[in-house]
Length: 147
Image (tube, rainbow, N blue to C red; front, side):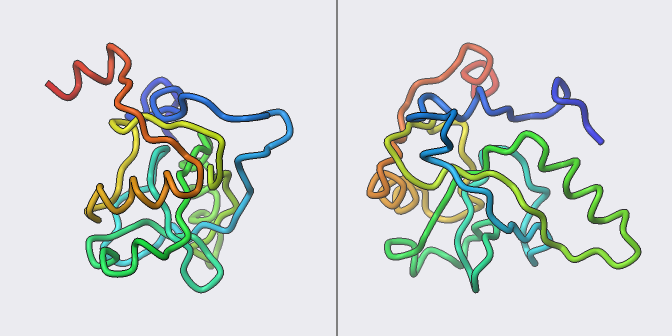
């Protein structure tokens, strides 16, 4: 289990603004499948796609339907602990309940989101259609990681 300070991405590196966070206006707790073929370990900032009633990580093959897909951005700092707890079960389900940002008005940092190999332009257009602005704002720490 990684400590928050050891994680590559944190909510502060992803989320710029969220309307009424105390009322969870822009976010929902949803079922997230973390054991998707071809997907990497899940972390904050992953763009998720609704697939058969559950959210899963985007993969490169999702490009075709990205314009009409239901997307969300994973913003739950406990995702690694949730995944570890599920894997510790005798028969893990591969699913956890986690918080995602799935509607606006909200804003995320472009450098903080991970589209999992799907075309980023389509992902950004989809998120912005849902009221989630994808900005080029970057923290000093994130900007130094990109150079």
